[in-house]
Length: 428
Image 1 (cartoon, rainbow, N blue to C red):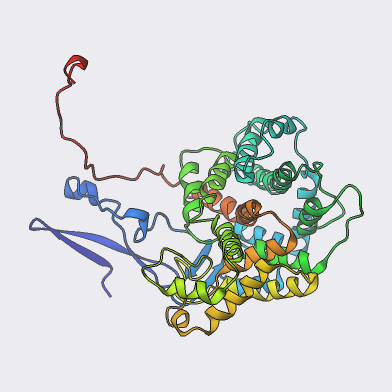
Image 2 (image 1 turned 120 degrees about the horizontal axis):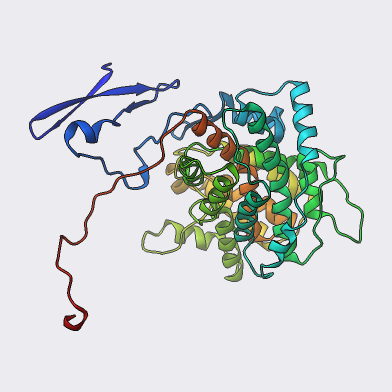
């Protein structure tokens, strides 16, 4: 196979190198295209065919349904590792030793507080404010309390910044929930593990003792692992491009939260529940809605089935389906919305139309079911997604800065008016 690609344009031929990745992916390196051709650029709306960077963090093969973090399969990580191990792996490149993991846990515990003045910022939001807006603002506000920029060349400073954001972000998540529910602002418990702490802060009520539920904590741990990174998606690309201006880690993460908010990205699991609620309100007839989904002339769209990247079964969905079944069984929840969800799942897995098109339930479908069963408000679903994606954003930001990537600056094709004279206001 040639290691060059040849472009012929207006009678001239130009050669460009072909870059090969470690998983046999190939890309044409066109960074000199504009210079050597006298201004020619490519146009690729949505960047579906454009690689923005080289990365050693996550490998994704949508056709084969493969997802790996740093070379480890998502299936094995979900089964054998906990969320903090996976976070350490994504950020620092290797699974931690027992000693490294213990130190990581302890250091995070030591930083698991936020400045009391952060409450003043939280108080400025109305109770009706969407938790994602609150979370983005609070994350950005962390900069005010940590104003010194991180020296990316200092491993010690980088480690401290990683520990701080991993420690403080869950508190901001829980405070966003508490604000919405009108509940007291809980703090972390230094005796508990990372995910169990999140569970306690979210569900501890002032009038009763906290009771750990291992099935629920394990399901949350799995969900966070499955959402931890997903290659160069919208929010991750946002974190990298904001960070490419040398904006700090907290500011870049805040930008990632905002990008994740959209219904076409992190808001997809919220959209699933809103769809289920609409189906229940219309009588809960799953067969009727499956027929609507198959009708090209019907505007109804079945949310939580199929995936923009995976052309086969979402590997994360296979893992979280088991956790969803266990949570529903353990909690014994009697909820018509969850019954409709199970009905749609059964229909899709047995209907030849969906099988032929590989429109299987995805991770958003099952995560929405779990969050609903736990009593987490629908508008908090994307916030939970952000909590899981945090280590991926950190890892991508760190990699981008360490590789000294240039500031992101996409080009465009201008389609506006040509030069025209200014018209005096009296003549318009």
